[in-house]
Image (cartoon, rainbow, N blue to C red):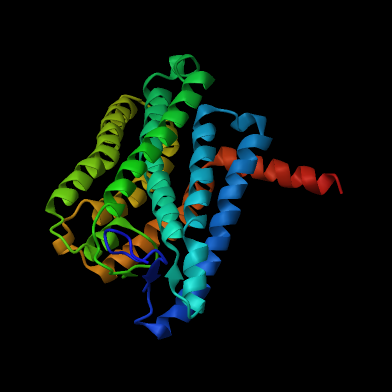
Amino acid sequence: MERKNGSSLTGFVLLAFSDRPQLELVLFVVLLIFYIFALLGNTTIIALSHLDPHLHTPMYFFLSNLSFLDLCYTTSIVPQLLVNLRGTDKSISFAGCVVQLFISLGLGGTECVLLGVMAFDRYVAVCRPLYYTVIMHPRLCALMASASWFIGFANSLLQTLLIFLLPICGRNKLDHFFCEVPAFLKLACIDTSMIQSEMFFLGVFILLIPVTSIMFSYCQIVRAILRIKSAAGQRKAFGTCGSHLTVVTLFYGTAIYAYLQPSNNYSQDQGKFIALFYTIVTPMVNPLIYTLRNKDVKGAMRKVLWKDYDSR
């Protein structure tokens, strides 16, 4: 059976790293370890944010949202990749591909907006500390988090529809390890200039607008910190923002490289390794960045562990 645009209803073949069989076993072991650490690290952040009353603040509310998002994001991609790396069957069903593209785009877009919201939270904490609890009311925090999820998945719905309306004339081999936009554009059997322009506009909206708001927030934060006279006060203020800024740099750097460059400049091999970075490495590293540099999280972890030890 054939769809009107020529793609097979049975699905797609994910070529992934099949042209490098010697690399597949190494990648399987490394990615399995990274995935386990990502699950453990993000689950720990979520659990601590709920168990410790001292972490019931807007910053940790958004951080637990980010950790849940990273858990979902890696789980939507990595298990399929691990099966692909160790098995002979590299196929994914048509419905499975649609769902994977929709979920991964939705979660990626949500993270873009959520990181912008977290930058606003840091801006209020540093620049308007006396009004922090008034401005960052729990209802506003819930509204901003919900808006992040809504915008991310609305953008994903538009992009998924645009991609699957492309005629691909029976081509079903995706040169990637998951269903992603740049790989689908390579399958199209028509000129994709118009669709690329539309995708670029959506990419600018979901990537560059939050980046602009983050840059504005941090410009204001730096100005406020430089007005603090004590070196200890400056270090404390920078410490509250350093973790978030590191996560922003890691995530946006790879996402902008992957999604906002012309497809004729896009190297598929480079794209795969960049995608590995933002689908598995960044979600694994995020909890480490926030816990290693954060006394509150480390203190909460010690209290939970000691409480568990004392109860035995």
